[in-house]
Length: 291
Ligand code: CP
Image 1 (cartoon, helix red, strand yellow):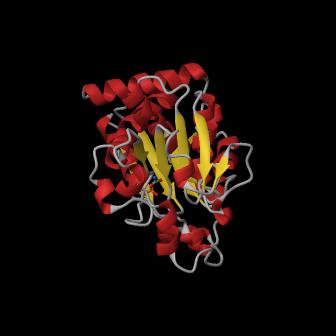
Image 2: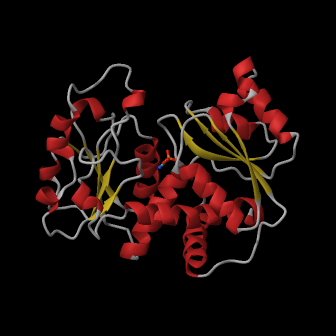
């Protein structure tokens, strides 16, 4: 039984396979490879993109999906995460797709070896399917990403997208640069800058991140317009440079990325969402059929 808790769970050959399968799924509607399979989603945190794209991916492959809404489940009566999971597994799903605030939650459930576990975002440590779809979006654009320079900009310390992205993209040979004000900067050996202007000439990609206000116990900035003055990705900063702009969503408009830049062809935010469906189809195929 293979799980996807972190991208480190995948071999190089499996990552190449995922990129190839996602490309093929995007090019041609596939046969229903997962007909009669059942997936369950268990999202303890809100989601627009990840949950719905897993559902679309599963349905495009012919599988059924059942969602458990934890806010209306017996977790509200004190049932533990492990017991909730074990009870779902008694209904014999082929995989459980989980989002949780605790970094360790998906790994803990995977260790129970009751069904395949897919991490749909946990704490501030791992969001492997987002990292893989971001990689797919860059490979689609550049062909080969090795040696390309990417600046991750914003609330890096709170971000599981950044954390998973750093592990996967450095493994793929990309040069990752971190750009953030001091409160948003994690401890890291990677190059660190506090001004976007200082890296703009040398990057091929900017990955902008949302300031995750819900994860800050006290506000880190009095005024996010002041933050935006330094970090918003807009036409004044980018000019005509050939830089790909990514963002995992949800975007805080005119704080992370300007309205106008969101309409610019260099900005791939909605392409990332589209690619998320094809990458998640590839992930479901890999975990259920190929492993
Ligand atoms: N990128 C991402 O994880 O978005 P959602 O929180 O909407 O799933």
